[in-house]
Length: 145
Image 1 (cartoon, rainbow, N blue to C red):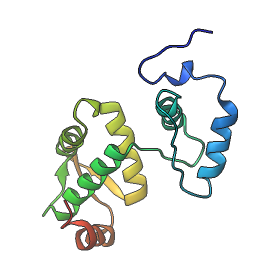
Image 2 (image 1 turned 90 degrees about the vertical axis):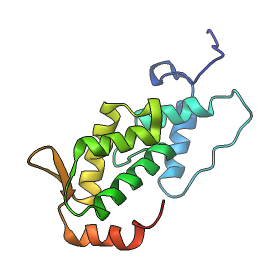
Image 3 (image 1 turned 120 degrees about the vertical axis):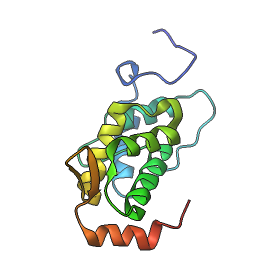
Image 4 (image 1 turned 180 degrees about the vertical axis):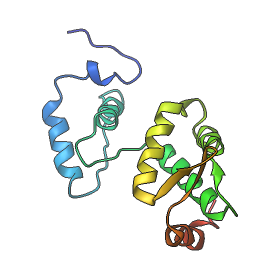
């Protein structure tokens, strides 16, 4: 076995930790988890495996992605009319920098569409399907940064 020192390993190179991964998922199903350990033991590799291969029913986002999603939803909520999907992509990329790639944005947008009732309309535009959901976001989140 060759132990590599460097950045987190990809999920295909993540091995011999299946029991730890199973234990983590069983805890996540019922409560929050704080993953703390000394440097270089594989915390980031474990979280990368969880993110890239989530169990059924789970949606995993890095904190930066969750913040970008919140900002995108706020922008939609306060807009006077529908927004261009490309402007939401720009917001996402601004928030994540180099990490904001289009396939990941598309996945996030699909999740947001399902969970927050967004819809794509003619001309590459996006809006809330539900006025109630839009108004809720406007009322409770529009003033936050």
